[in-house]
Length: 143
Image (cartoon, rainbow, N blue to C red; front, top):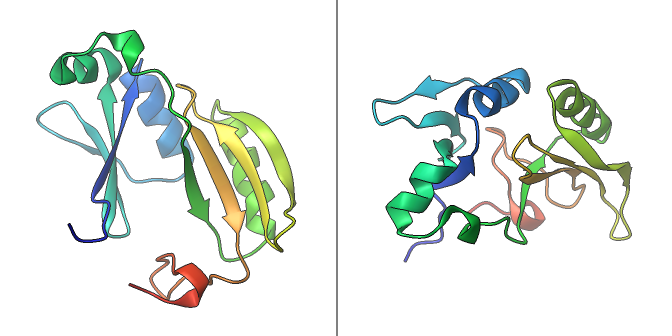
């Protein structure tokens, strides 16, 4: 298996609300024929899919999907962008769960929940500068 995540699918309760939330963050939306709302990312895609349909596809009860102990991270180029994006997420209907603050390892981050409870970290990592195309590079080294 190659080191790559191609698609992240989030099960959501209300496609219209969740789609509008990510659009309000400034992301460009693509509606697909199969009912997915897609947001193309750098070398990957974030897909929104009805949570009940996702559970049915997996053959699980909807409550078995739960909310895993996972955080999606969005890294930014400048420290000041962290607070700006948290404010934008809150204005779009998200909930800030951790205000922008310095981190013990030398970075700066904060966290918000989207309307379905998915947690996002907004982070500035001075040790892992983003590439020219915005791609994350652990310790400044691309894949």
